[in-house]
Each structure stands twice: as C-alpha cells, then as structure tokens.
Image (cartoon, rainbow, N blue to C red; front, side, top):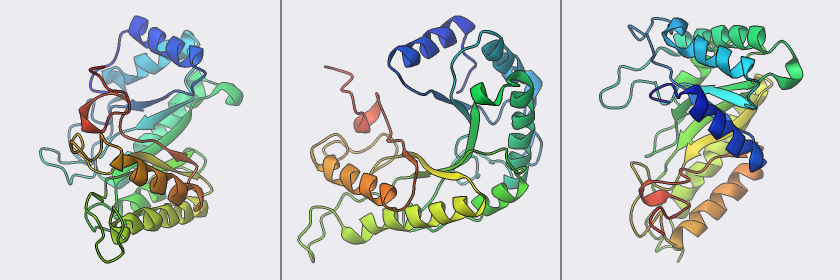
Length: 245
C-alpha cells in the first residue's frame, strides 16, 4: 500500500470483506523509512501504529504480505536485499505475535512477492536467500508473481496459445511447491495474469483469456499450489470487472 489508510477507511474495507465472506490479506509497504537496500524497515514510520490500531479495533484480517517486487530488477527501484527482507519479516512476525497473542485469531504472514518464470527467466536466487533469513515458523506461504506473455498462437500444435509458453506455469508450480515444502509452508501464486503492465487490449480482457486462466488454475491445482490470485479485480486491461459498465 503506497500510503497508510485512515482507520475509518480500513474499517470499511474489512467490513466489506466480512460481509462478502472473504478472507482479507493486505500487502504492507516494504519501503517505509528504509534508507538503503540493506537497511531494515523503520516500523515507526507508521506501520507499527497501523498494526496496533488494527489489533485494538479487532478488525478481521486473515493475513499480511510484506513488500512487492523489491528484488531491484525494476526501473527506478534499488530493491531490498533478500536477507534484509527476510529479517524484516521476522521482525513483523514478532510485532504481530505481541499484538495478537491468541494464535487462533493471529494474521498469517506471506512473502516475498517477487516475479519469476516470466520472459524466459528461471527461479531467481532471491527466494532461497530470503527463505534462509526468515525465522522458522514466521512465514505461512511463499508468494511469487508471474506474467508469461502467452499471447501468441502455437501454429505447430494448432492451439490458440503457445504450449511452450504455458509450460512456464507448470514449471513455476512445480518449483515453488517443492521449495515451499522444504520449509514446511504453502506456495501461493500471489499475483499474475497473461501479460503485465496493465494487460493487453483484446487479449487479457477478452474471451481468449479464459484459455490462459483455465490452464493456469489446473497447472497450480494439480501441482500443489494452495492459492492463485489473478491480477486484477478492477483496473487496466486485465480487470475481471469492467470499470465502465
């Protein structure tokens, strides 16, 4: 979240989630008060107060995810060292444990939400280094992003989307399920669509996307990935709800 919401707005969002019988997971800003890629997160920049207000108001939050694509591969971002982010998650777990002493109602933690198996790239070393720095028992699920750009037909096989491109989804599901299992946690496809940067008109907002999404869901489900979150509900050319109609 780029800015901390007001308590009133946060209460309205949690009330909506409860009324819709949804489990709410909120992404926390992984940059507030951070002065360098290897510098720890400054919890006094507003995050501790936000978490304290949430706990005191007994707002129903199922989990928190720390940071978003902070591996330093994106323009304008120096990123955060994986060991530093892992230590930050450990610090967050300590804060959460103090604010929610009852384990039954305590929000779970997820991360690091880094992109992988996109554009032909494999598994970044970031994930293993991050997991090596996270205290045992602090992390509920390993999350990653994936936008493989499977928007071209496969003429050799006569399919509407490239089978070799869709195979990246199989590869990611197998890799992350195995990696998460080593650490005794779940694997989550934390964010993704066929194409990123808002999607592509006529591809991610059309019937064609049903084939991609169907393949995505079966690839994850059959390989042990616990949760799939598709980008996005509203906004861009990959939205699930048309913002105009």
